[in-house]
Length: 406
Image 1 (cartoon, rainbow, N blue to C red):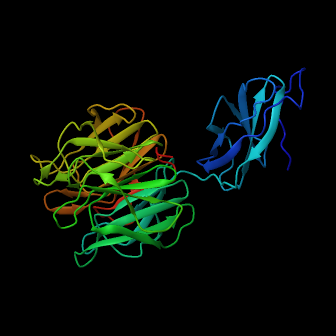
Image 2 (cartoon, rainbow, N blue to C red; image 1 turned 180 degrees about the vertical axis):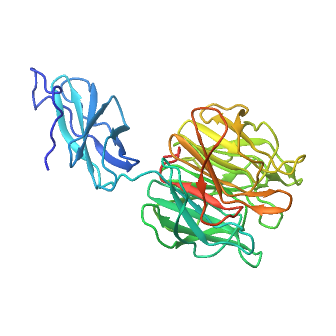
Image 3 (cartoon, rainbow, N blue to C red; image 1 turned 30 degrees about the horizontal axis):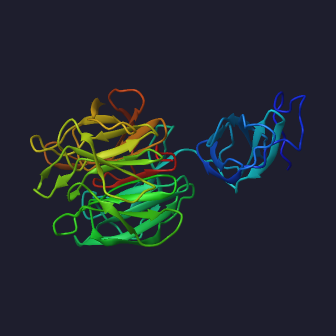
């Protein structure tokens, strides 16, 4: 199908095909929920006048969007339909030839919950929910190894589950992956640098970053990373501010943030630290949570990160939700409360909604919950019931195809 310029607007009375810009290069599209974000590099040859904007258009359907620079988001697409995106630069002489992305398929925002500790043993279960629609979780498949104190991260198409503690209580270095849009069992991805559990993980659209963990020494300050689209072992990224495990991580498209956990004292910590996901190096201080806690959960939109629940040094468990603005260093602010005081829960999100599932609470004895609850990330307030996991469990992991790092 050929490129169709949108109605009404781009070819002026001065249109001259010899003076229009060249085609944008390096066009790449990332699918979301009924939308695609397309990135590109501006053409070196701008033609007879400066570029005034860009138009991106889907093939099929001819749905278009405009913008002054990369990226441009094309909305109103059909989930499950494969698209390519054409991008043209515009100057006063009209639009130039287009550059074309590879195929991309939008999909509904889906959150996965994997592994954890049920009432006995460890779990290999992966569940999924459609984040925009409240209701109970559905069975997705199984991890390659049942494990607890596992972490999750993801791109828009692939979910990754990292390390953990297996049924014998041993640390493992296993990394699994799944295709988020297609239910099924996980596949081996590679290995972490050491056997470890209690890591924190977050991701951009291309890179997963793994923080700290319990290696038996007792803890590590190592940050490692993977390229999510390419199976293989992790690579050293840099160091955390201190050796820490059982914290939680979230991200914007450019910045990864890790908060809380147990440090090597050992004691709970309120420290928040951050890294630039695309650039290897050591973590930098960000600010503090409202209180010290470990075994908490985190999720994010592209601008705001949430940290929920956990175990502190005073009361066994807390129901606190904090938030930060990811681009601006500083201390966390109170957001609201979970429905109960809980630790060992997992968090995932779309660009608008945060989901927290599972966890461990005492009422009066040890209990493992299947509760899922949600918040609207942009609006402070208490959580609302979402539904139930297929199996109640704690110290599980979560990820999604539409989180704030994409």
